[in-house]
Image 1 (cartoon, rainbow, N blue to C red):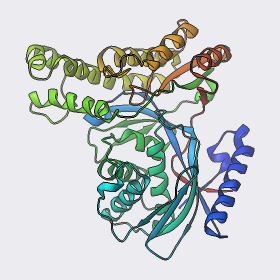
Image 2 (cartoon, rainbow, N blue to C red):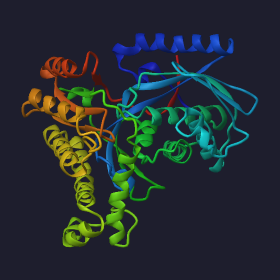
Image 3 (tube, rainbow, N blue to C red):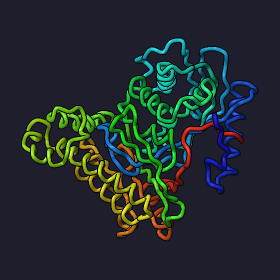
Image 4 (cartoon, helix red, strand yellow):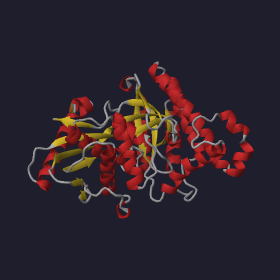
Length: 412
């Protein structure tokens, strides 16, 4: 399995601090498990750029791996025990001779460990024990998908230690999603894991979810004169799983009126022609969410074409259109259960004030709480950070780079 150097993964200005970070991870491993010849692994968080809540209905997304990641110092063992100590959390110990779903493990890292192993084994690959110490700078509840990064990291470790890299990026993502859906208990789509496993700017077409089509975008973001900002509005994701689950469920309820399982393949004209029936059987919100799916699905292609041709202005226009559609039609900016909490709405308003017709901003990730995404002209970056940090606290605004690779083994 190919290994990557720090300079392959991180920007030049981050090499020194990343070197220290990996060395500290090795020291923490040795303190916990005893001295050993550790190997290093990394998996990135991700940013969704286009296609908000389109993947679960077999749509298209534009996404990218980002510079924030979860890393591990790990060593293979000769037993069936996996021990993972993540910084700031209790150690998880999983006996992988039993890979059955355990209800008492739902929503825990142990469930993800067991689920990833089951997914790997069911595909005919090898699994085995290992010890690992992990540390992450992927923001929790940020829409950067810290859980997907952790899942991809686990799969990458097992891929390298026991399969010599035979598990593909696509399979890594599918195994990770399986673990999150069936073992962890979160009904996520495949986009988070795919962006983490592949890295770079990519489009993913889920028309056939078992064989998604992935294309990398030929665009050097570092030369466009803009910065990618993710703003943490400090919203609480607790008890939001029903809100997330309602989006694909409502979209699929519309699809069922057409004898389909998902919306992909149904046209806008067909939706509009059956407006009365859809409103009666599925409700108004489901009707609007179906229209959002169709429009945002088409926008992904337009965004990719704009980036490939170097037309960044058109790309930004489409980002703003996606954000507007999410606000009005997808309706995932706040939950009606807590209408007094609207951090995303405030963040979007302040972003628009600073940008003043330039750049773009939109909800980031699943929505309802957490983060917004903004493309900020570099000459407005200082003002943008000042205003958004002023509203949500110091360090709320994170300036990121796009990472060129996904889950990998790292050589120092």
